[in-house]
Length: 320
Image 1 (tube, one colour):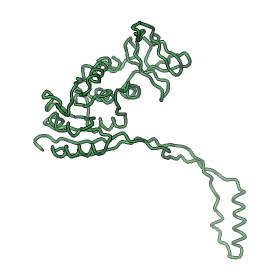
Image 2 (image 1 turned 180 degrees about the horizontal axis):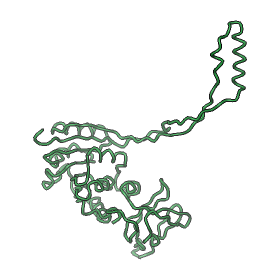
Image 3 (image 1 turned 135 degrees about the vertical axis):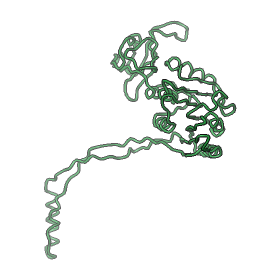
Image 4 (image 1 turned 45 degrees about the vertical axis):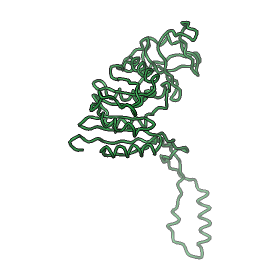
């Protein structure tokens, strides 16, 4: 029940984030014992780069506490979608926070929204959507791979989110989202190899009062085909974005200040060459004042491409 509501103490069975550093986090289940490959019940010992953790010892501990490892220490954190995205077991390629933040903003997802998602994949985006639609909304998520759909369903139940999500095993490009969802959705999100085939089904799923649409595609050709399909069905405000997160390098740099007062003095032609040589020698020998300036520069390497986000609006039926 780790994702359902904020809580203070780790209970047995909770999903816990073991934080060692910003680049070293692990997701563990707070169970005192586990079953090994031989079918034997053994003590749950979790191995990290800083030694072993006896998981039994974190049950009853407050979230945020420091726990000792055999060769160091770590912190036990309450999971949230951001931490889950960094640590979840990858069943497919996932969408990360920079793209997800734009998706949630553009789809106008809020408590009470009905959202349709395809495909579910590893459930990275699904956890963000569920946090946004609780406590009165619902997520309908589809995946064509049966094992992935079943695994995601079990995961949502284990995290305490089962009441807010329905997981379907279906190829939505061929079979759509089902008649039971026609005219029910406030927003539709697609992450599919051929998303243009599912655009007509998204049109049917959106409410008569209108709604928002988003498709994530790694290739611009996929995005172009989606734009054509959207335009044919009367969608408006069709836009494609590429989200590139860049972290500027901020440093304080010290620069010398040169005394250039001599330039204000008028010189004769005869003494100009001699005085210039003396002035240059004087400038080089004099102690220099310095000034500290806060500077910003781009990193030497630029972030890589993830995908294109195509957004569109379906106007209310009376305005189409």
